[in-house]
Structures are given as structure tokens and as C-alpha cells.
Length: 168
Length: 99
Length: 153
Image 1 (spheres, rainbow over the protein chains, first blue to last red):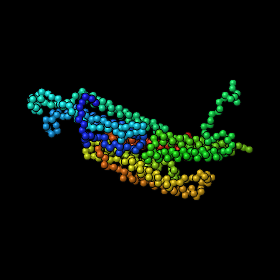
Image 2: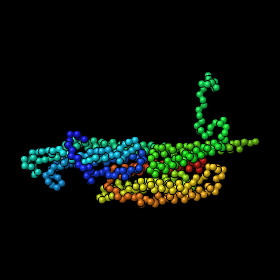
Image 3: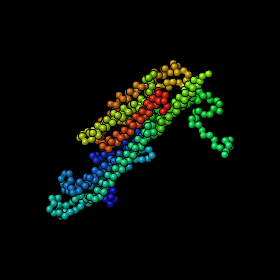
Image 4: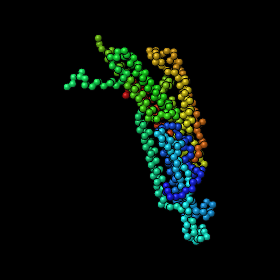
């Protein structure tokens, strides 16, 4: 997560972007070995939400109008994570959840283009302040994180299979 | 060469099945030993069943513990079964001795 | 006597668990198949409610079961006290069968649209429970077979 961005903190979790819904209602009580699956899954859900935000930013890199058609540039959004103590395992592990979805407070890029329909009085067009390189690196990080968590799920499944071999 | 009754000679290893202890204890009859080991096997089986129940009704036991308990009960039962088979063979042999 | 062969072991409980995990697998597979259907609400068989029902059945069976063969009198298996215990064990099985009939009340239709990762997570956890229960069940049957055939190996 780049540290030099300024974030405006929204009130937490707009409803349609929230994907880590009520995981605690799906757990198998306090079964020790099965809780590791829940923790890895919470990470998968969180990383996928982050990837969604990044792909939305990249897709809207040149968007100069908002959804109502007014000349308001797209505001990049960023997802921040938070430890979720609702999903725990014995030994003190905890899951992850989306803490908030923040809008960037950086100034939009100004480009001089008087012929553009969205140019203002001085001839500048405001473009969203999305740096494609940074977004791409974030996307790679999110995807590697996703793979790592899937790997952990594989290891958990292996553990259970080997445990079964006690009575095989 | 150390003689057998030298003080440095190591003591014989303990028997694997504590229920079948050495006969010099004197007080326990063979019948009691046999029934004791059967009762122990039953207790282990009941404990394993209880652990399985706890695991599947939301208890706090880990699968490894439960499976170990189940396997221990299984092995104890098979050992007792084998002991009983040997006893039957011994009895058959004794019965076949022609006087 | 034959119907009480599995009475004091954990076999009826394990049977119910295996039934439940199989049924739940079907429901979750349906959720995953419908992941892109607009307006689809995920369904699930709640494991907590199942565990409660199972606990009730277990307690009911304990309340009516006495040890079938008293160890105080191992020379005398046919005592009237022991035959009474056998008929009580018979009636306790009905409690376990009731668990299977209660699946409809455990089914939940109110799932908010959770993601595919959650559904797959539930499938995997369900699979682990299923494998565990089946493994222990197989072990119990093998044990009974060892007892019946008098072969310890």
C-alpha cells in the first residue's frame, strides 16, 4: 500500500462492495483444525475485494465524467484491511476483513486540452490521479497473496488427510 | 564377562502388558488378570466413543486426539483378542495330550 | 440381539453425521452451480443446528441405555437385569433416526449473496468432516469384523 497517498476515510463498508458477509455464522463451532480454513478464506475474500478495487481504478484511468454524466473525474478507491477477531483459531490466529474502502484525496491530474468537451475555463481537463504502475504492482501483490492463501488451504487439507491415516 | 547376578547387570525390561504382570505378586489369580484386561479394553472403547461424540456435537476436541483414542482402543482390543486366541490354542493342546 | 449389535458404539451417531454431510454437500454444490444466476439466494444446512439436534439424540440415548452386560456377574449373562437393558437400548435408536427427519428445519434459505470463496470453503470443511466420520465408521466396522471372525490381525 503506497504510504504517500492521502486518504479520506469513509464510514465503513458501503453495502454493495462488502463481500466478507457473516463468515462467523458459517463456522463449525470451535473445531480447531477446521478454523484454519475459515482464516484462509477470509484472506481470499479480502484480496479479491482489493483486486476488484484495483481493476476498477485501472479501468477508469481516463474517466472524466461520473455516473451522472457530469464532468467530475473518477476518484480512485483503495481498500484497507483489518484483523477480524470474529474468525479465530486455537493458538491465537485471526482472520482478516476489509476495514474500509477509502477514496483518494489527491488532486486530479490537469492536462491542457482546450478542444476537449470537458475542458474548464482555462482549457485544462481533469483526469483521475491513477498511476498505472503502482496499481499493477498492487494487483500483482494481491494475486500472489491470493495464491499463497490457496497454498495454505492445500496444506491444511493435507494435514487433515494425514491425520486420517492414523486410523487407516 | 559379567555374571548374571552382578550388581551392574541391567534389570530385565518391563513386560509390555502390565495387566499380565509377573506371577510372583501372588495375590492376583489368572482369572482376575484376564477379566481386568477385558474391563480395561471396554473402558478404552467407551472413552473413544465419548470422544467421537464430543467431536461431532460441537465439542472442543481436535480430530487428532479423537483418532488416536479410537486407534488405541482398537489396538487394545486386538491385543486382547490375540491373547484369547493363544489361550484357546493352549487349551486345545493340553486337551490333546494323551494320557 | 442383532439390532443391538451397534447399540453401545458410536455407529448410529456416525451414520447421522455422514448423512448430514452428504446432504449438505448437495446443497452447497447447488449454490456453486448457481453462482452467476441473478437473484439467487444461497441455501445451506446449518451445522450448528445439526449439532444441537445430534446432542439431543445422544443425550436421549444415554438416558435410556444401561450397560447391556453387567460386569459384576460375568458368569451370568442371561440375568433378567441384562435382558431389560437390551430392550431399553432398542428404544434409544429412535432418537437418532429423528435427526434425519429434522433436515427440513435446518435448511436455511436466507443466505445473503456470499462469494464463491465462502462456498468452496464450506465445501472443503464439509468434506473434511465427512472423511473423518467415514474413516471412524470404517474403523468400527473393521473392529466388529475382527471380533466376529476371531482374527486379531
